[in-house]
Image 1: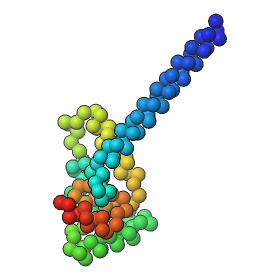
Image 2: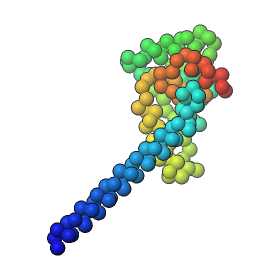
Image 3: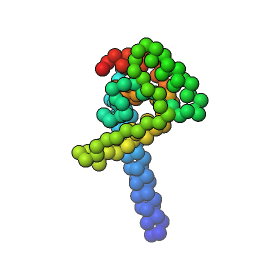
Length: 145
């Protein structure tokens, strides 16, 4: 009898673990699809309508980061071409959560976390963001607006 109960408990535990694994994989697939659907042909990701200075180019990299020189170079080159560019060492974005469902808020938080983990320099163009893009990609994205 004890063996039978132990077998049932073990079976239930395995079923629950399988369900949790499947649910986790499904959430990851949904997130990847969300990121892909928000990425345009130049690789820029639309994460929010309220990125800082969405009508100009913002290049973000910490001052003491090894990639800061790349960020400085990008800013200098774009400014030489009369493309309005701001170089900064931090960014933030705001979103009005009042009209959003819990699912939409969770997706937005996941996108923000995804962006936070991107390698610098981050370049924001027309309210979209990309990690370490080329000058050509930046110019192409800029011309879309």
